[in-house]
Image 1 (cartoon, one colour):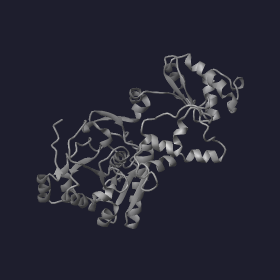
Image 2: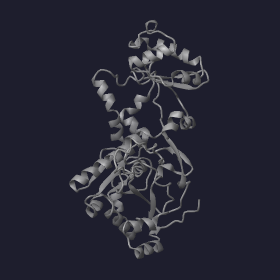
Image 3: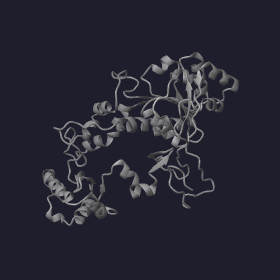
Image 4: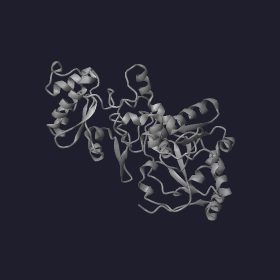
Length: 406
């Protein structure tokens, strides 16, 4: 059996007669208040794991091509005008049937709109109310705008990407804080709170902030600094920040690149041997003063042959040398193809659901939804009477959009 986003089920996986092909979060009902970035990513992760996630969209014109926006995969959409009394009442009726509500407004906005934690948790005491912000619900910056780069900068994490103290920090695409420190942390918090609610019968409010999440991602750096193994504020001088010759990228003869990362001595010895060199003839890799000399040596060697030569030499070894691929190459790499790391769904190549669970596999439940495409269907499924739904749609409180045929 093949499922989108999951590898083949083998006989070894079928360890019991109760092997469940529902996702791990099957039966969990989630309301996603439509937003940008980390909130949708958290909702996507929950949906991939089997939760019934409905996205509450605002009325208004539809822009772009929402039907191919992979970040919105797996969810149905209901469009509600929550500025109208009946619209807010409809949302709160949905809250009464939900396990989770997630929103990404600045602190206080949901309260002003009438569906803050106090109102929602009063309606549904078991509700997990998840709030995603950049700076958190309190603190001097809580009401400021911000983006991924700002959160990396304020936590010190951006300096970890510098090559040296006298070079400017880079501007990485917005996924480290937004998705690693934000959406992923939020999804983890939601699953943790759901587990607690199952034990206690009470929900809770989650204050997920990207600045907190990024800080958490740097725990290893604080740990190694305390051990004397890392020099803070000295980028490019540490063993895995580009300073060491055994943890760096090197250009090849065809202007492509290799990722060279044999940190452990035994892996370094394997790489050196495959290059036809002897450890006894090389400068001491454990002496930072020798790093520039070693880097120059390795750079010259790698620059002498094209990338494919080095791929054929190092593939399947413990040298920890791999190609730096572009996105198109990554999709076609034999390892990624074998594991179905990337899948094509609704005409879009995208990363498959992760991680992989043997008994409750993740899957892409459905294509991204046009805002309002499932309004009537969702309201019926979540317990509203058909006559009331007709009135909501006729009055324009709820927008129902017809999905064009494929």
